[in-house]
Length: 432
Image 1 (cartoon, rainbow, N blue to C red):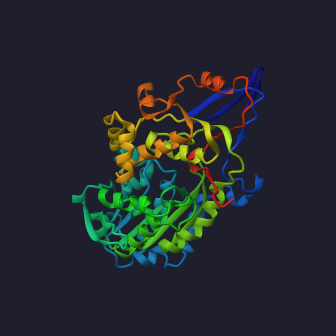
Image 2: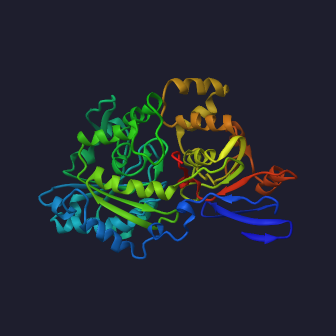
Image 3: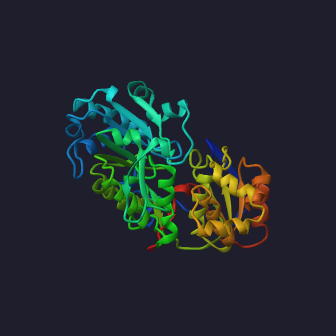
């Protein structure tokens, strides 16, 4: 924040850099920041670990509800470690080598270990991205591969009580030691990320994921920060059909710096991190603002619209009905999902598309329905690399000239405004 004549300069993350803008001195925006419980900026519980490797080691050697990983590895022939893709903040490269070393201590050779990226239906990672995710040393040591959600690459393992046909990547099924990893943060559909989410949707078939996510239309909507919802229950029931033997989950900040680590039983270790994640990422929605200026937090959270819509959902919780959101998100991949793009560009009558999607859950296209609900409540401007024609097609107001847009929105009228610099991981606490 920099004070200059005629206004104050603010900066928020944008792609791998920053976007700056000026607001009049008469507009004093609140900062919507995660990690500040009860206004306590010095809560050490939420500070990044000074020695993340020590934190990893402690978690691995004090597993919750489970034998140590080295013990579990004894007499196993094949192990798979499931990791997050580049759209997630999880620093897999920090803990993969310690996990491999534990497996080695249990008698498993590197040649018996495969790392699989839990894409769900996200795009495959490039070789450069795979190296970034795992680190060069791990990439050279073990086989690293992308998950394929194609039905022919997955095996049917049974059906959950809610009717989801559980189809899981054949390499995962055929391993006799399955290790799930990821980071824990609130999630609009599953309540929280982490835990069983690495299995389903992480390494499940497209139709399995679609059936699981379709539960959002049939049951009470999940509350971000709570595991008590049908979608997560369905994910965790899948564990009874494809058991995962060990979990390694972390809590990280927007810079991927590790705050906490949890290892052991998939359910118990995950739940150990749930409360801390909720306290960190969910903040009171004390006011409803006229204007919220929101950034997902830069790369990778603003890599595409498919991911950036999550920030709009969070910003909406702090914006009054009829208020304005300015989303500052690079979106270099534009849509980020083929079905999202198809439904947006194929139907000239948007309401017809929304009516169809309200009746049938279509994975990928569901983002258009989520966006439409937000556009019904707020006027939304988008500052990004998305072509203006695509912005307008989707219902956004293009904000190619960010400063001009904000000048118009703040000119000669009193408004309550807020800035949300890490919108992808800043959630409203629904219990406040």
